[in-house]
Image (cartoon, rainbow, N blue to C red):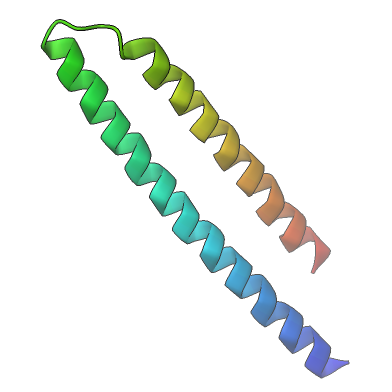
Length: 77
């Protein structure tokens, strides 16, 4: 029984680290998107504002989904 708990904790730790790395990737994409939209706005082109906002909302939804998954994993142990 103790061994299975140890294996489960290791697996949860691995999943948590993978989600953190994926979150880091999403943050970098968000930052790149913000900079590119800001550069376009400074240049006088506002076409990228709406797609940038929609993409930001999608990234926010993915982050909320991952947070719910982490809370579910934490609640289950």
